[in-house]
Length: 336
Ligand code: KG4
Ligand code: ZN
Image 1 (tube, helix red, strand yellow):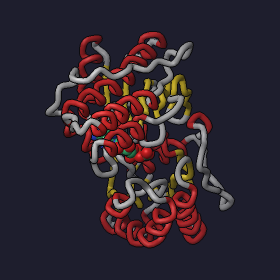
Image 2 (cartoon, rainbow, N blue to C red):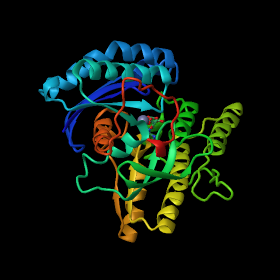
Image 3 (cartoon, rainbow, N blue to C red):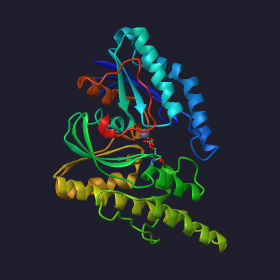
Image 4 (tube, rainbow, N blue to C red):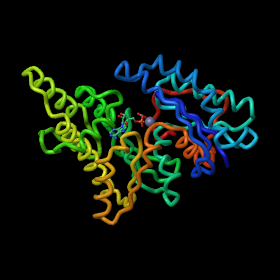
């Protein structure tokens, strides 16, 4: 089954063709990051406008690269939630229009479910059940994936998402948006024990996260130093901050796996590109003889191939939508 998939939840306009949830026939991503960089973050109104301009060409290019016309497509999948509402609406309405014009079934896909599915094309042997750490710019969840479309959130952030914390710390250090990747690179040449930073815990909720205190601690250190006319070593500060975030994520993730009895651990979301997080997961799983998986770097960030991958399993579970489908800015991953 070949699915044409569309993603427009934030600042990438993307389309792909994916066969049977695993085989990527094409994947096209038009990023708006250069424009949002000017403002230090995503400007929702600009994002919506750029999606409108790009979506027609991006979808046409995905079909062209797959060497297919609509005759060769079996269904249309689209990210419908969560995300920037104006941005999501562009993809949802485009997909609805295509579905109406072609008569093909329409499959609504939850953005975080699709991040989890970004692992399927690269790891043909990966099947649920597994435990997944979903870490993106907007969310940090530990999710039990019992079946492809049956999920339970067992821990989440109480404040900032991991990606958001990376971006805000990076911005204070003068790095361009989105700063996560720059901070990660700077950290590779730094001393992770150079700065003492808090390791926040949420009382009574062993699998929940809190990153806002950590973010504030690093911002305060930078501001205090600059008031004294000092410049802090960016590499050491990046390495110390990255270590604090990754240790906090890993501690809860491993604890949850031990208590719930999962020996198959999966990373997903933009922050799964983080080099220390990938290394630490490998180490912890190797030590315990557990299996671990993370997406290839080109599928960690937002893309439509992951929407086509999850869309296939949503379709098999009977989750299609009518033309009344609407976009939603928030939606629980458990509800799909
Ligand atoms: O999943 P994603 O592409 O978009 C959302 O759904 O939010 O995640 C984007 C987030 C950004 O905060 C970005 O800085 C972060 O992922 N990110 C990283 C790295 N690469 C991307 N954070 C830490 N280390 C990285 N290497
Ligand atoms: Zn995302």
